[in-house]
Amino acid sequence: MAGTGDTDAKNPLLSVLKADTGSGGASPGTPASPGSSLPVPGSGGSNLLSPTTSTGHGPAKAAPTAAELLQRVGVSGSTPSTGAKWMAARTSTLPYRGLGLGSSYFIEKQAVVIDFGQAYTKVGFAMESRPRHIFASPELRTLQRQGCSLSTTAGVDQWIDILDRLLNRVFFYYLSVSPKDRRVVICDPVRVPSQFRSALVHVLFKRLSVPAVSFVADLVMPLYLTGLHSGLVIDCGHEAARVMATFAGVPIISALTAAACGGRRAHRRLGRCLHARLPEAARGPWLEEDAVLEDIAVRTGYVACTIPAANAGEPSLSLKTDKAMPFKPPGGDLLQVPPECRWEPFEVFFSAEGTDTGDPTVVDDDETLDEYCSCSSIPEAFVETIARLPTDVRSFVVQNVVVCGGCAALRGLLPRLALELHVALERDSRTAALAQRLLITPLDFPPVSAVWTGGAIFATLEGVTDYTREDYDKGQPLPDWAREGYI
Image 1 (cartoon, one colour):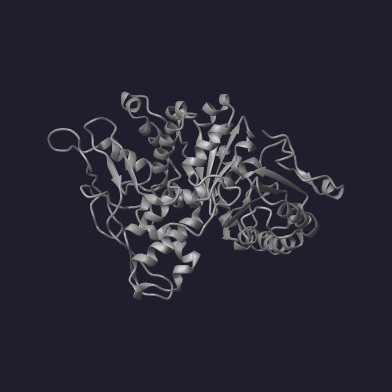
Image 2: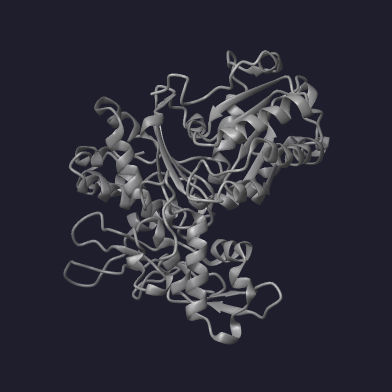
């Protein structure tokens, strides 16, 4: 992943970014700052790349190395994005489409894999490359956020009613299979409320009569896509960004760190930015709808990034546009999303109070950190996780960093995150020596379903310990990450 030439030795940031990363999502098509020309969707611009700065004498020269770098991280329009490649390969990787919803080429009935995400739930079968269905599940998120404390959640009886309806949809509508002969693998968040887990097992065993259930730590599953048993996973989720390390296949729960800078906060900042910059006639009630704000973020948003030059005298590249993007809200007229609103809200991933945006109207003054969110930005949570690890483990996990989650598909996030993590490691005296070893591992799967895909691989392994219906009837306790002797 890292380069081996003299250029990489002089600029370690390029060695972090020079991977053919697959988690960057679609290309933004946004132009560079004045002095360069990256294509903008709908602008008809050429696919040229010009330097933004030049420190040498004479006319500035083109930077083919940087241009190639932009194409690899998925922020240049000259090559198909990872999302486009994934969509083009769907017909070849999904042979079961012609067999019906509940059919496959496998004679043995494959396990059902479920990933209860913070915004979307992913369901499908083991040994498949992607989930059969991804659907929104706001009922799970609402009840877990009634207060700042994690202990403030719904009771077991209330969770049973919710999960009964949800799992019936999963088995009988989305998957169209009988649950009585299907083992279930749950991608289990480490800090999920105990009431939720108790209700989940009750519904699976008593209402649906599944034969066995396996609970696996969700932040370990993306490592199955890398082929390595040690690494560090950054999950950019809806409610928070979580960081956890795994060494030799064992999750280090004590080093789990969370930052309150998820997609929900970015969407709220986007709504405030639009309210402040759009003309009054263009505003509407849609500014308060999370689904519309999420649609705007996906269609028009990107993360601003400045990639430094590889050598002295070579130009650097700035990924930032000064052009608005058209968007038609539901029930409204076509409007232009201001250029500042396309990148400013997403500075929350890297800034504690949003001061980098330069706009006080988008600061989240009314939001407080959850009790389990000890950090306010992803780089801060990353450094804190590394500092909590044993000294002899740090160098192993920092060389296999995986970025997943729905927000990880935001265009331009991966190169900016690589730069920010490198700088954060250098600034902290506890982790400065690890900055040169930082490597981000690319994935060949969409980041939004990386946890589920890893769970689908895990479900095919032999020797996995299951929690059976007989164990539940005998009163044996559920598997618990806080009780099973994990580090």
